Every structure is written in structure tokens, then in C-alpha cells.
Image (cartoon, rainbow, N blue to C red; front, side, top):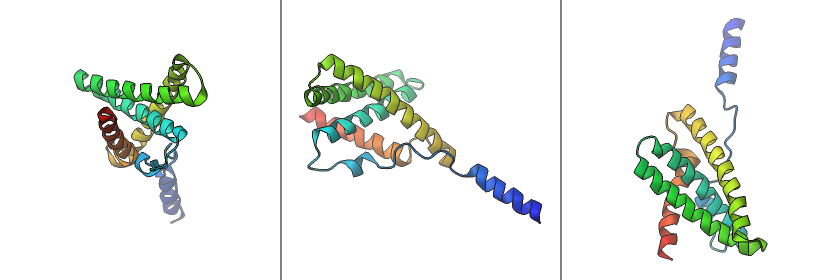
Length: 146
């Protein structure tokens, strides 16, 4: 009986969520009407991360769709960099460099979270990852109208 209990406890321990998700809040929950410039830059940077992740995923299946998401990410990064440049009084090139590094880190975070989602339910684009992707696609469409 003790062996059985030990096996059950061990299996629960091994199947538990050993790696918490990198993001605990969906972008749609983060967005506020009176959002400042720093928060706007944060949202745009997270969008570059998830859109880059989606772009890389899609290149494997459909290069045209991958390029489309890559373009969306690039447009979001350019906008974030313009705001960053103004907010921090740096050149646009310096802002692009900072945001490119952030994009690569955020892409990695989304990749980790998507892999964790896949382990939990067999799908990559669920939970916060899927919600952020849908949010950023809609945000991109709204920004194109401006």
C-alpha cells in the first residue's frame, strides 16, 4: 500500500506544472483606456514577440503566411521603437536595437509558454498565448486604420 501511495505521489509530482508560464496576464486584460506611453510600448513589444513566434511557426507550413506575420511583427516593432525613441530621447536606430532584443526574448517566452500549453492540452495556441495572438492581430488591424 505504501508503494502504491508513493507511486501516486511521485506521478503527481512529475506531472505537475514544474515551469510556470512567463505571462500571467493577457494583453487584453492589461490594456487600459488611459494607458501611458510606457504601457503602450510594453503591449507593442509583447505583440512583436507573439507575432514573431507565429511567423516562425507558419514558415514551416506556408511561407506566405509566415511572411505576413513577420511583416505584422515588423510594423509593431517600428511603432514601438518610434514611441521608445521619443520616450527615452534616443535615436530611432538605438530604439530599434533595444526592441529587437526584446522581441527575441519575448518570442522565446511565448515559445516556452506555447510548449507548456501543448504539454497540457495538445495545442500550442491556447490560453494566454492564443488570446495574445488574437489580441495582437486585432490591434494590428486597428493600427493600420490610423
